[in-house]
Length: 333
Image 1 (cartoon, rainbow, N blue to C red):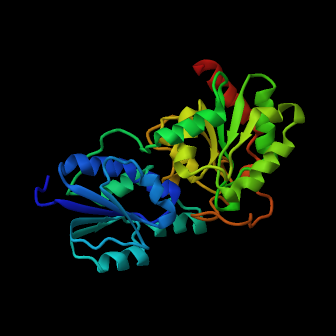
Image 2 (cartoon, rainbow, N blue to C red):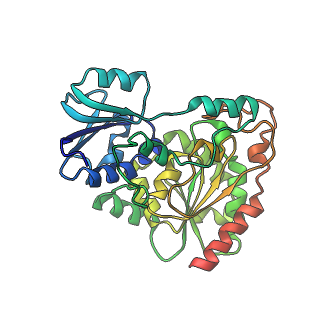
Image 3 (cartoon, helix red, strand yellow):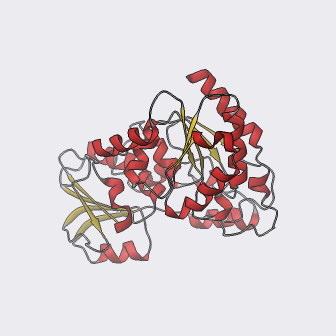
């Protein structure tokens, strides 16, 4: 421990999942530098993800940037914006996250995986502090819904029936399991088990949520609670906290669910584990189509399938997904 480190700034500007994946490091840094003040800088849209975090003293944004001085700056974004921001500060030591994007691009363009053994993005964040500490504490991500967030979640979801949280959105289309397939998974579950399903996502996910509801047989629609576009980040977190199991694409809400130790059934289309975004320190089951020469087609996702067949998602079998979820619910509830 360096006793001269009294003021620390952590920078991660976006997005939901990436910021949530910084929370183990925040906790570990706070433990390694006891008494140090830790500030955080992000984009305004994401600042509420840090609300209530006991390890963060102040949350800054690009609209109201920090001014310093800081003894240690941990740049977990490492792009032009974060470098410019830090360049305007009075900062002591600056360490940066090494993205290794070139290795991802080799995998995308050639199909050759040189990323090595699986390393979570959390571990890669931690590596930016190699030689300074901290040590892994073996715990997962953290979010801190308020009492009012939990009251909202309870009022919307009720009690007495197992709750499946469904996160059907994603920024890029090649990360989204088709709405009609989600509907078939839900219908298969509703046919054999008393269950409620809550659909979560931002306003941009409301259309796919509506498509899922419309594609579910009418007799089962009353078992679906559509909260897409109706929740804040921490209200969604509180709903996930109440859920018994989660079904999700590779999206920020999947990492949000991991903050509460939920079993996650994860659907990968263009995503692959080598990118480092599997759920951190929680049980999960991954569904992916092995052996597709066109996968991954991008290291972030694409707006359309460049081959036109979208097999990476279309070949994921609804019956298998529903069966695995049903097995888990039967064993755990």
